[in-house]
Image 1: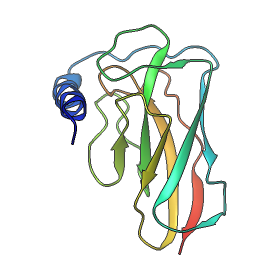
Image 2: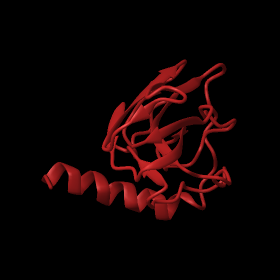
Image 3: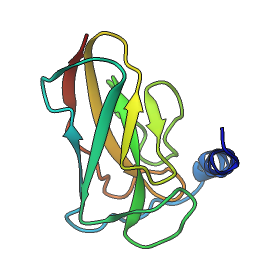
Image 4: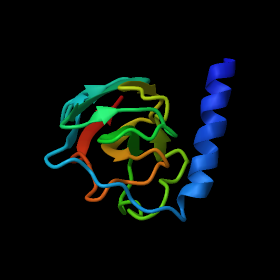
Length: 141
């Protein structure tokens, strides 16, 4: 792991802990996040490369306070939506891309899987209103 990756993880961790007490950031009117690929119903092999799409706002790494920006979080098989007033959790079902990534390759077990994107602000808190994609269901061999 590079020094840059360690620093990004450390800063992100700080904001995840601190973010639970912070106010939500307004989202730009009309902002949309979506999954470019894989597409609904696609049969794929693991690891799966997920490409993120975004309209009406920009991407900025976690910790960067720049208007009308955020960073991607990938929800995997999340049945109950995340709390919208707290930092998004960090676990196997909630992947953070606080470095400003616009795609990711993830290991997924075989079977039917749901993927969904949600934008988080500099503190990993969903915007108000949330900028969230529709769910995409795929099948992993």
